[in-house]
Length: 295
Image (tube, rainbow, N blue to C red; front, side, top):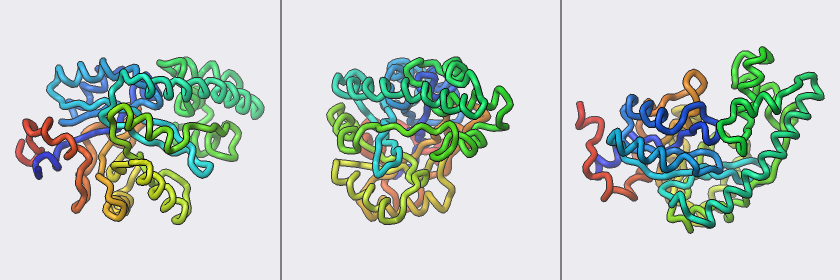
């Protein structure tokens, strides 16, 4: 079990089917080059890349679990829940995700109009050119357009100046309810995992309420080591995982070369004391060796 715990797992990545820049097969090759042994593609509210990702991973000898990142509204904040090891063809999950994608189109148009009012014209059309999936025009696509046209130097700067609450390009949206999204994941055979909790702007009391409700709806894990977390945050959420009886997950949240903080396979290990979420699949992973055993 210890060897399984130490696998180089990346259970959070994005492709062109949501707001990533690479197709699933190229992303699989990047993960393989980074030494990833267990991988999941987790596009936002979309499962279209799953079969290609799984085929590419299998061809490269990478263990694979199908995944998705579901958008949730909780206490006025957008929260993301990963569904790991879901059935990508499950009808209820696909129907729920289709409803979420339908709401994204109007939000994208409203964002374009909001930016036009501050003198940035053509943003909606420009963002669509970056979107491999026309149903999933996201804030990241708008950010890439604004960088291309010289309004900001980086995607990070765009979010800080335009795309957060109270700023010109921000448009609020009502996503799925937490329990609803988790029911879709569980019905599809998946494990609900709370993504990058340090990103949410909750007070300590609100964060406790999020974890309490997440566990109450059948939550299984929390992303402890990820591209959005600094080392001290990973330690903090390792303790939170133990407090709430949750398994620990690990994922780069990779979107694009030169844009993401961490490439697939380059994350630090989970902190000590954690139980990895992938121990749930230990019977499928026993043939893999830990990175320490490979050196």
